[in-house]
Structures are given as C-alpha cells and as structure tokens.
Image (tube, rainbow, N blue to C red):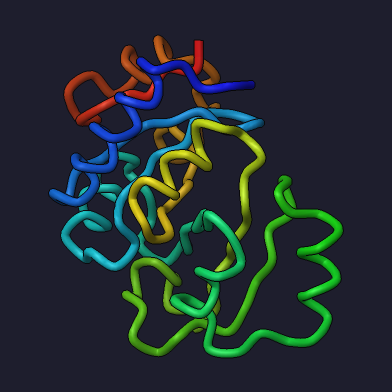
Length: 168
C-alpha cells in the first residue's frame, strides 16, 4: 500500500498532536491502536483513563526500526537479532528488560517492555514521522473488542481521541 498525499499530510498532523501530548488512533495490520508518546507520563495517564485500563497492565510499544530499540530496552539478548530479522515487520512482540527510566505506567511495573514493528504503512509512517517509539495498545475500552475501522474508533471514543488516522 502506497500512502496518498492526503495520508502523508495526516501523518504529519498526527505526529504534531502526539508531540503536544495528544492521543491518536491509527490502523495496524490487525486492529486500530491508540498512540501516545511512551515517554510522556501525562499522555500515558490520559491513555489509561480513556481506555479505563488497569495501571498494572503494560503497554505495547511500536518501533520504526530496530535502531529505536535502545531507547526502550536495557539489554538486547543475542537471540533477538534473528527473530527481528525473520519476523519484523510483523505481528511478533518481543519482550526485553526495560530501561530503568521508562515510566512505570508503560511497563506496568514489570521492569520489561514489549515491542514490535508493524508492517502497516500508516502505523510505520506515524512512528517514523514522530521520530520515536509510540504506544500501540488496542483502540477499545478495557475488556471490550478492539475497533477495526476509523468509524468504530470515533463512535467509541468521540472527542477523547484527538485525531483518527483512517485506514479506509
């Protein structure tokens, strides 16, 4: 899938919203996700509030590429390289020991962080435009089915989400 000029502009706008501490919904290869800056504790608080999510549940993080992994992982075991080579971009989540300075809300207090690289062009474009990893928790209230369209996200969250990148 090639991104249209409109989609590219929406990605730029979404990255600006995220830099301002906002909440953006975006499509992935499976369902819609909710993105915030994982290093911004106020944005994480808002994400948990909007989802009605328990604070002890860690949040998945999307990377643009493995060059961003060092921002999150304290250690990268040798086995991770071949797994990333084989399965990324793709739906494989790898769990690493978290850098100690990561927000406890992000890790759920587990001292570990789950990361993956999405093959969806809008998701990848958003992470690249933002220039740093992003959260990728499902676009739903905790315990409910995840939204699979932009319209579902809008119906479910309304103005609680600052911007919806619509994958069509």
